[in-house]
Image (cartoon, rainbow, N blue to C red):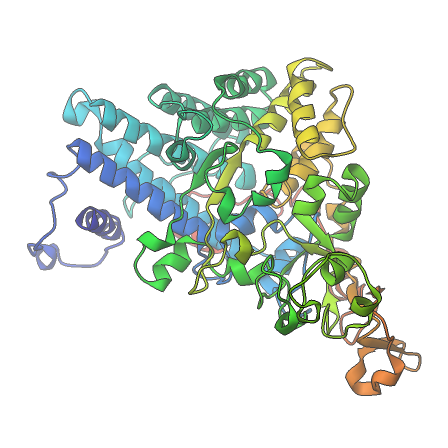
Length: 597
């Protein structure tokens, strides 16, 4: 495996060599299989496609330039209206917040990373697809056909994401040379048409997942994933009948099922790996990897810190509850609008609400703190209300009293391992998304009942939501997708696809902080909130009470309007697509930039 991986790296690196005397390069390499002698056997095919998985997983999970999270998550979630970027305050998450606020340029590091990793994954796929061919080897074995199909499905997925975010990316079907300058695709619809056809070709040579308990079928590309890619691409192409047909095959296969309501807490966590709901997720087994760096790359680069509550602003030294990792950076909070809409839609007691977000009162009274001892009972008491060694100690920026719980590191669920990497699989698609895409396709075709309504209801009922639709409508599906697929890469692009970008146009015009009156006081002279350290505890409350803070030091709620003015927020005719990155434009003279950039 190691020598095969080395071979592909050598081949890829050779494409970038320029200005060298060829004679200087003709040096026999010891212990390396020649290109002509590889790509022949079933073992070679398995090794080559394993590199597709390993490389893509690393690249999706590890941002090489922007540091703190995976490029795939950043690309698919930063621009949504359902999150706020917090961190330590206005000087933190700068590149990321610029993308969220739509004030980024074509040199944004997150955009550069995402574009690069998708094409690198395509390169690895093309090594497999282009070399295991009947023209080169004659009739392929069943194993070789399956490996090619797995690479083809991954390549189709990569192109689909590129098409969704960049519109007309070059379709790359061969290993490029330094002289190649691939041009833009004809249209986004053309990209999706190509993706759908490629996904079907892959599906023809792939097997189904072997039942709902088949772990290998959850972490290996199967017919179900290929058809899901086809269905999603056709949904984007507005071929709703075609999307319905492809997605219905997955539903009728019986190989997938929503996890029970009580298991929703496992979604996105270690104890939910390979569940009945997994259409495809990258496998993560830290015990089989050597070296902390390798484990961290594959397990989500700093995800355990990036998305967990701000450790130095929460009394983590007094927090005993193992459902929250101590020491996070608090980069991501649910937006106030999203949290309030989720609660209004589902109710406070829904399984989904409890699994997705926590309120400040739940942090204070339903988590176990040092003062609670070992005989802990959830719920508010006078003693808890007066305990200053619990809750937050500082204002939490970009927060309105709601805290992310869905993708936090939960040690009690096995998420965080000893050396800090995050022990969970990287989910690419869940069965819930397939059901909701199917429901949308049916709604777009004018159906108001039948299988589409059942698919929608299945998701609503599993969530234990108080909102269960009696008729199928596009509005009902849109509503459900917002809540069910939170932080799963759908929100921004769905709003663009549906032409519902109004909320994005006002992104971060209002961004408050969250404080606790036991730790902050209001100074009428300066009209600002401040911590008790400056004015003394005598001015603070004797009990916990969370409040929205409009102005504290330099973190005013309307800071970004004052900073960017009319430039703040989504602009129609421009932000529907991302700009092709600066580096890609400089290297490829055939690439035409997207409108407005």
